[in-house]
Length: 72
Image (cartoon, rainbow, N blue to C red):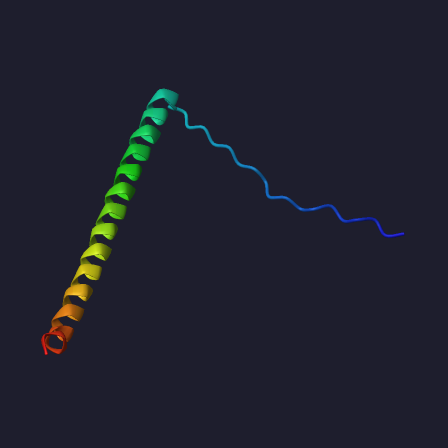
């Protein structure tokens, strides 16, 4: 009868610096989180504006190209 082999797991490493300030660390994480979300909102807004402007330009170009055939 074969016995199942044990799954090898990575060793866990936990380092806590000598001069560790949990409050300062939490404040830093909060500031980084706020910056990250504001950047992603700004990026998505820019992307939306870029796509809408591209669509409007394509529509204007289509109308410009086909206008002589409509007028006769």
